[in-house]
Length: 113
Image 1 (cartoon, rainbow, N blue to C red):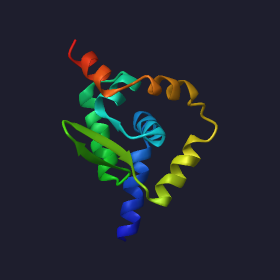
Image 2: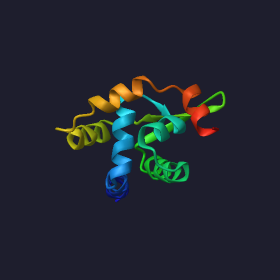
Image 3: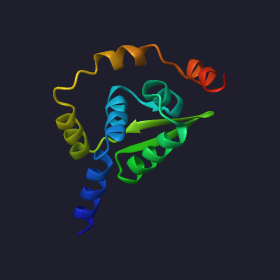
Image 4: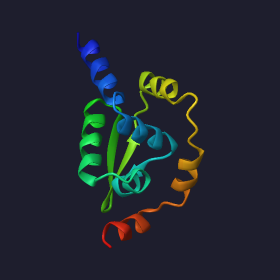
């Protein structure tokens, strides 16, 4: 039964457009909250709520690096396979370009303007 409950939590994590986009961004590289905010332009409180759901589902984990908390995609093969299926046919090239120009210092400056 635990495996079924785990799968339901995972599917709930995928069942929101913003959370799915966060997962796709994390599939490019690990990100901090300010980088996610830069990429998605949604409220920090909303991002935090989404990250909490994703973390509870076991889809992401966080790591403290100095004053930053970096979020990383899980390495669970089932979750990665599901993300790849959900990502099929979605062009993420513009997001990859935008993300290449994002860095934590720039994001932090934007947050505190």
